[in-house]
Amino acid sequence: MEYLNRIILGDCEEILKKLPANSVDLIFTSPPYADQRQSTYGGIGPDEYVDWFLPKATQFQRVLKSAGTFILNIKERVVDGERHTYVIELILKMRQQGWLWTEEFMWHKKNSYPGKWPNRFRDNWERLIQFNKDKNFKMYQEAVMVPVGDWAKVRLASLSETDKIRDVSRVGSGFGKNVSNWIGRDMVYPTNVIHMATECSNRNHSATFPVALPSWFIKLFTQPGEVVLDPFIGSGTTALAAVGLGRYFVGIDTSREYVEEAQQRILATQVRLPNIGERRNVYSTASSHSKVRSSR
Ligand SMILES: C[S@@+](CC[C@H](N)C(=O)[O-])C[C@H]1O[C@@H](n2cnc3c(N)ncnc32)[C@H](O)[C@@H]1O
Image: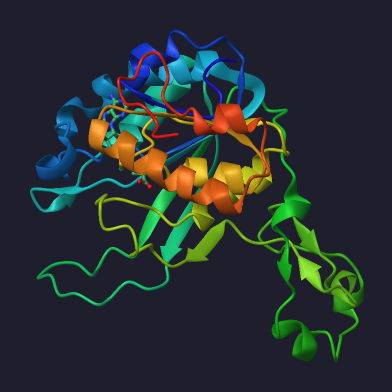
C-alpha cells in the first residue's frame, strides 16, 4: 500500500477515500475536541460535532479490517455549566452506522496538577472508546499484562475456604472468582483504567498524548507488521508508537506545520529504531498528496 509509513497532509475524510477497503488493523486517534483549541488548530462547535465526525467515521469503517479495532480518545467539554452530550450522541449515531460500542477505557492522567473551579474539580481523565465492526475482533491480552502487585503477598498468604473455590457474585451478575488461581503468578491482566502521565516534552503541539498511550493499544490490538492508522495525527505520536513496536503507520493531518513536526519526530526516532519495514518507505514520509517533502 503506497500510504504505508507516511504522514499525509490533508483532510482525513478525503484522503481515506483513496485507501483500500479493509486495509487497516487499528485506528487510534484523538480528534480535535469541540471548540476547545480554536486558537491552535480550529474547532468544531459542540452542536455540529456529530455531523462533522460521522462522514469521517464512515471512511474509518471502510478502511478498517473486519477483525480490527477503532479507539477514539475524546472527552465532552463543559458548555453553559454542564457537560455537552456530543460524545454520547456520537456513540449512538456510530452504532446506527453499524459500529459496535465494545468497550470504554479510562485514561487516568497521573501527573495532573490541582486546580480550582467554582462548581467542579479538575478534569483528570479521558475516555478511550472502543468501536469494532465485528464481535470477533483480534485482541492480544498477554501483551499488556502487569506485575501482580503487592496486594497479592498479603491477600494470597492467608486464603479462606471460599477463596479456594469459585465464589459466584452475590449480585447475580453470573461472574465469579477463585482467588487461589492467582497463587504463584507474577503477571496479571490489567483493568480498563490506564494510569499514565501526560506528555509535557512536546511544546509544538497543544494536545499531544504520551507515546505510551497508543503503544498500549497497539500492543493489545495488533501484531508486528500490521497497520495502525491515526487520521488526526497531530505531532505524530501514534506513528512513533507504531514504529517503536514494529508496526506500519498511516498518519493524516490538515496542518502543514504538524505534518512537518510529525515527520521530524519520526525521522529522529528512526535513527534509534530502524526496526520496521523498508527504510525507503519510512524515510519518504511525504505522499503525492502532500507538498511537504522529507529532508532525506
Ligand atoms: C487533538 S490533535 C491530535 C494530537 C495528536 N494525538 C498528538 O499526539 O500530537 C487533533 C489534530 O487533528 C488535526 N485535524 C483537524 N481536522 C482534521 C481533518 N479533517 N483531517 C485530518 N486532521 C485534522 C489537527 O490539525 C490536529 O493536529
